[in-house]
Length: 383
Length: 156
Image 1 (cartoon, chains in turn brown, red):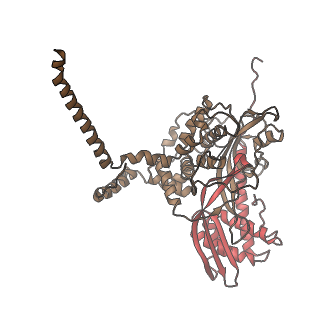
Image 2 (image 1 turned 135 degrees about the vertical axis):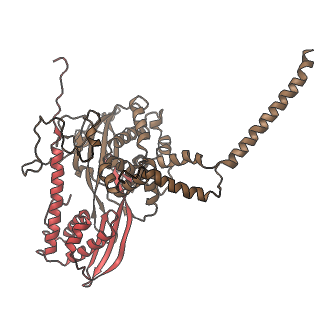
Image 3 (image 1 turned 60 degrees about the horizontal axis):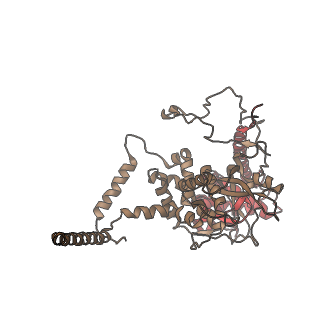
């Protein structure tokens, strides 16, 4: 148990100075600007927005700068800031079918309406260091390693845009009746908000999806991996991953009509899993869904794997493994909570420990006394 | 998406739609662009609701079309002003820029009494065109990464 302590003000002020110095590093190196982090460390910013559960690229960049790149500390800063803001309300549900696509791939369909669009991805890079990035001013923009393939020039007026219609892949399967239907429940109810109400179990899917959206990427990645390795028994395919911009629409009470607040970048993953059916119902593929802020497809993929695993109860499957147990997943996915509880062990536990220390000393003393008594009685027993 | 039309005044008969359209364009514009549009001299206006930053909870749908769920919040700044002619202007946009919110609210108020061929609407149309061009460029860049995968037949 933690018992509050007093004192140490001077030392704490000094550590604030020292951490600022450590954050700044060698002063002969120019200081990072928040805008540089926002523009050049976008994937890190996306992670901080997801786990901080707040979409604001500038704040995510500031959080990363202030936390020296510690993603969880940065997410903590976002969460703390969020609590100071009033909430105006909830948006209309975002429509990912209308996304302005920057990347869209499917591992299930080779030829799909709208096509496979790789977009910006590290998937097909060789993971070799690009030492040119070490030399300042030697920007690597457009320095393609192989220039043998002719590429269209986007500056030309004849350049082609993507198709405006990019159907979501599960919707294509759905049209054939082969995909588990995904429709809002009766009355399209407001979703549960775990930031305002305590979670109870078993948790519904809206609760699980919200928890995973703000959950730790590493934790969900590990759980998703466990599902793939057999601790969950799905056989997943990436039906589709799409990355791009969607409009956020909000209806302010005083206006009474929907206002388009601007665009946010989202990553969506629709995982297609093996069938469910019965003698009455024809077999259908089942879904796992992941949605996350920014370009963050590892997160969205992990979330969709665990989402499917957590649906085991709905499908009457046994929940034998961690990824299938909502209580286990939801109670341990929040890295700000987890870090808080793990790291509070650093705080003074002097009183608590004193108690333990006295106990172990007493036990030791009593043991020694008992052994001594036994030693005294031993020769008699031998005689 | 309501941004494909570059003429925000075209549907002035359907006032809500035209207004929704310019609000969307102003929400996407930078503070600098909005300052240019407002001009150097601010019209006299009363601030009914000072620029305030808060959040909107962004909702998604399971599977894209199913049950609603809370994805996470986004920062939003709003402001309400009233011009001397009584017109009220609103601004609601993502981000935390209070100055932009105030200027955009002034524009919203002015745009409501603007003639269809007014300079302000033309300015908004220009912003819309810039935004549409940026979107087209991004789409075209993505289109350069379109692939055709070939399935290799084993043992053929």
